Length: 95
Image: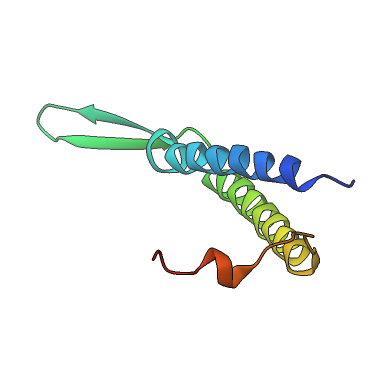
């Protein structure tokens, strides 16, 4: 499916935000901790989400970012912009 560069740039921004949310989920919310107090203090950690699935989704999104950003850079490398300028005049010192 073809997308414009602007559409891809917006999608890249949204995907980066999603990756940040998933990384936060992977670190903080992916487990539940329960403390047992008494004679023998114990800490029970139970996973709430399958960390492998969260990681798999993060990798999938990062692969998309790699492909999208590579295609944008390739497009920018071959796209010419017609502009009539005199670089020497623009960069002349002020007298």
